[in-house]
Image (tube, rainbow, N blue to C red; front, top):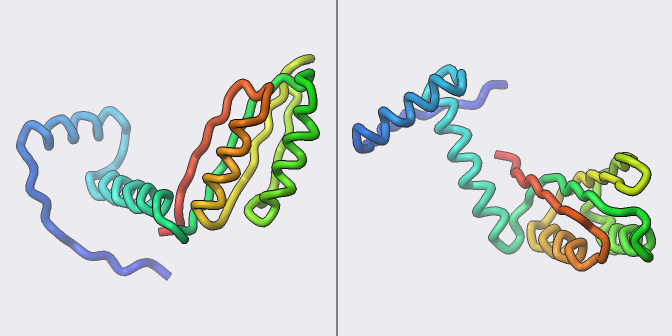
Length: 136
């Protein structure tokens, strides 16, 4: 079933609209409405990410040296501590030293932030990248 749409007007400086339209054409997007809807969803997600009790979904992608002392044990233990929010994980052997792990998450924003913070404390992780969204 399609969502009911609402129309509204927006007033912006002409130079902002010109730059917006230029970027719209360059990106290949079909119309302003699609982009504005996505910007609104991003803004709502950002608020949910910050609020207590906000429900979010996302991924955390890690790159790490699997030779680092205790990293496998620490990653497993941290994931078990936050298992309620983990939907699944994917593990990829990048080369003889490096692993990539993608963790799909859902749940309370505060708990997911705590999980990401705990990952940041694990020695041997080279990078942590997060993508957070919400159902709106």
